[in-house]
Structures are given as structure tokens and as C-alpha cells.
Length: 82
Image 1 (cartoon, rainbow, N blue to C red):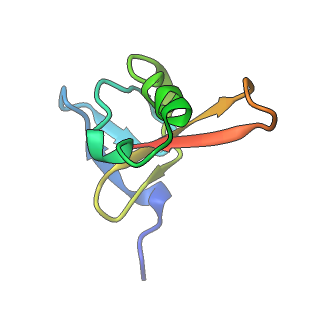
Image 2 (cartoon, rainbow, N blue to C red):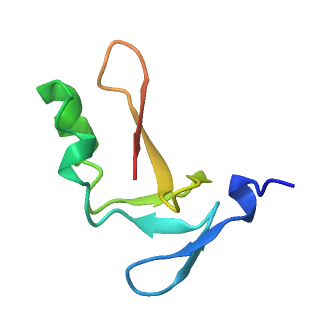
Image 3 (cartoon, rainbow, N blue to C red):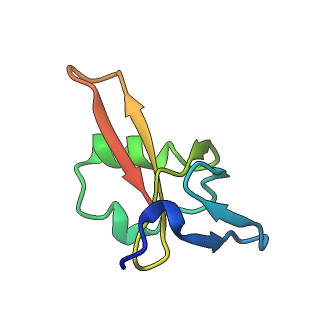
């Protein structure tokens, strides 16, 4: 049986257990996640730094995923970051 994202847990930089639904503060956004993005989108992703989000997924590599909705665009856009 494969474990689902909801069953996975990881530890944050302070050693606190993190699971889907946990609130986390984004303290770093690796450059590789934004280097190929157009400047306006890169700025929106980088704006996540320092903010608190709910974890919606923990992937197979043990990375927590969060999302931020942008209403400054013509359409609502979803941004995800590790």
C-alpha cells in the first residue's frame, strides 16, 4: 500500500513535526524554483517568503508544498513553493 501525502510527516528547520494541514512560515525559496519564471511571476513567488501558509501536500521527496492565490492578475493564479 502506498502512503498518501496526508500520512507523511517531516520535520521543519526547528525540528517541529509537519504534516498536511500544519501551518508553516516560508523561510527560504530555493533559487532553482524561480530562475526560469518570468519576472512578474518570480516576484509573486518570492513574496511568499516570511508568510505563513497551510501545508497541502508532502511529496515523495519529503518536501512540504504550500500555495498562495494571486488576485492581482486578470485571473486567479495558484503559486506553489517548496
